[in-house]
Figure 1 (cartoon, rainbow, N blue to C red):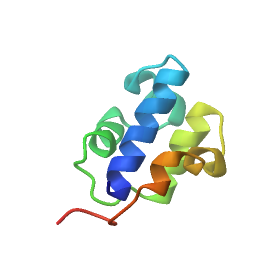
Figure 2 (spheres, one colour; figure 1 turned 60 degrees about the horizontal axis):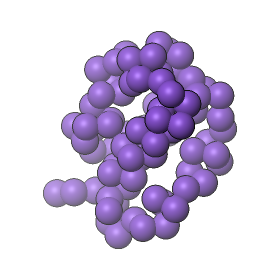
Figure 3 (cartoon, rainbow, N blue to C red; figure 1 turned 120 degrees about the vertical axis):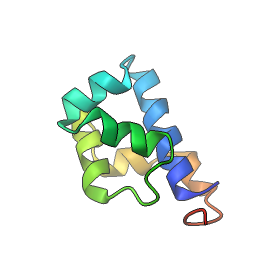
Figure 4 (cartoon, helix red, strand yellow; figure 1 turned 180 degrees about the vertical axis):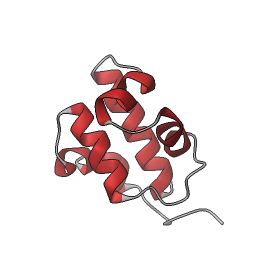
Length: 81
């Protein structure tokens, strides 16, 4: 699994846990839905920490909570070529 795949899966996991859509999360996070969709659907090769921070803000969690997932234990490469 790549880091961008883990980030994508983590965002979807947190949306599911909080029973919110990506559209709602983009509103709560103050980022465009297209930016969030690009991250979730793998169009963004390197999501910025700033974008992840905004996602965390929208979810009411901190960065530590975001990365506190087994998904990030399974990283075998940074990005896809």
